Structure formats: C-alpha cells, structure tokens
Image (cartoon, helix red, strand yellow):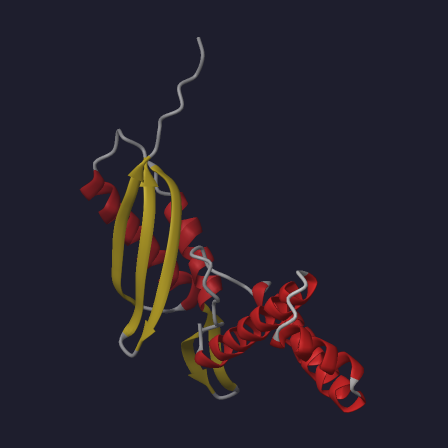
Length: 185
C-alpha cells in the first residue's frame, strides 16, 4: 500500500475513532469535556460550520476508502498496479502487452501439460527479458522434476509464440499435490 493511501486511512481511522468516542461518552451521559464539546459544536453557529466540515471530511474519506477497497487485486488481496511489458518498437510506435494478458497465456500453456491440475503465475519485466514464476498443483503420479521441465518448456515456447518475448527465467514451485479423482465402479 502506498504512503498517501496509508495516510488517508490513518486520518480516517483517527477521525472516526475520535468522533465515535465523543458520541459514546455523550450518549452514556458523561458530563465532562466530551459532552461540553458535543453541545458546543452543535449549539454554537460558528462551530456548526466546523462540525459540518469535519463531518463532510469523514464522509469523503469514507467514500474514498470504499471505492479503493473495490479496486483490482491479486490473489493475496494486494492492489495490483497495471504493468506493461515491452514487446517491440516499430515505425508506428511501441507495442506493449499487459502482464495480466501474459499471465493468462502462461496459465493456459501450463494447464495443457499433463499432470498439472492448477496453476498461478507472476511475470516480471527485466531488461534482459521476462522472469516468470509459476506455482503449480500436480497429480501424485507424476515426476516433479520431469513435469517441472515440461512446464518450463511449454511456457517458454508459448510466451515466445504469443508475444515474441524471451523468458530468461522460469521458476516452478510445486505448491501441493492434488488428490486424484477415482471413478466409481
């Protein structure tokens, strides 16, 4: 999370907590500074404007945090920034492809490898080419070294065919072994 968003969320949390504490103390009947502040802020004409501005600020921050909470996210729930991977320069301009599109190509290529049940991937753009990280769920009857090599070759070839990008590194992490489904007799 970037620092401006953290600052906005911290400010929103502090304001909400302060206002909530004041209102709870007022409702519970405490006749201390909280009650005096609430009474003063609602009865005094100049303080109504200040109270209204603070309420408007809390409303704006609430809407902002609500909108931010529904942004695009990755599997870990973190906000994903759109990234482009440079493909080539032509006379007409630069041709780019998004990391999401390449990750979909990688997933499709990996799922075509026999013995792979599920796959997630991440791709990083480097000056030398693409670095690809694959997490896979495989069936128990396959050799992990063999299926990993087959997976690397299939993904490397498909990414080269699809986007013209050279994969300089393809790391495979077998995250788990899938349960084999047995057919009923």
